Length: 410
Image 1 (cartoon, one colour):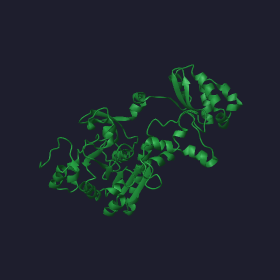
Image 2 (cartoon, rainbow, N blue to C red):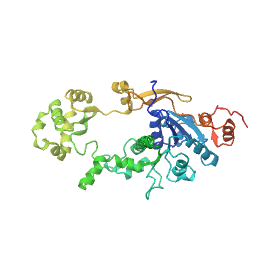
Image 3 (cartoon, rainbow, N blue to C red):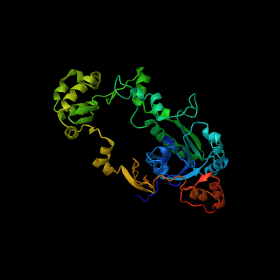
């Protein structure tokens, strides 16, 4: 563990999120050192707590994966007293992240206009399915729907196949990334001017933003792109090809790579074929070329071809399943996982922060909080008197983790 503070040490974030996009955004900020206070409803908490094979809401690996490095409090925001607690916390917060449908936070008295009047320096990040404005603003947002409507599913999969979504929730995760990116930009602006602002992003736009090549193909040429399987839409050969025991991903994306690949696999005869002479020609004959290469590569194993191609400077790699990813010596050297201790689950492995910073390193410092684990701690540090906290807990407005006894039980 490092002893240096993260880049966002001293920044306080109120996290009123659930499931993935918003929780991922605030987790990224927490990984960089921010003090993120996760606010969940009493009894049931974040919906992710119930995405588990067990009925124990504290044993959800899905929740643990998205909420490390956070402190957790439990408040009923539908109760005016609970909403008032958040307004008091917002006075000294730097950032608030929420991912409810537009208008939900306003109905609770916790919208941007209300909280920025209390704290003009507050950076308020809203992540929703379709954004804070527009005809679709009131619709619920899900990654699958965003992938469908952003065009991602139309270019994923094989030609003439059924629509296929990306195997990971790319719109959820990218919305979280863009949210964190927006927060950091807004915070830099605040440091210069003292002015907070509203940051608005959506799953739909996060999906559209990833269609850089595909949208440009339509914007520049009026051509509607189709799915290409694993092949690139601008370079060839650049795709997965069969071997004797599986597949290999080969990225011979330029002329030098193409020529080096042909030499590596002892197929210099391909360099003499006019249809493969340049990248435009290879793209025009991409299926024919893939078939020819596949026939040849099936004579040896993936490991054999990876060794041969890398020796000739050709970008390539095996196609791993997740277990193989974590067994790879390079991934282990880079430390892509780390371990924390959880009171219910015991030792829990996490993905580490995919970012190395020499002066302000990011790290996984703690596991996800139990429901209401830090309610007393956070409220007391925010100026709430002991009697106030007891009253909130006794009334069910606030909740403390099981075993955290009331100071003055009713």
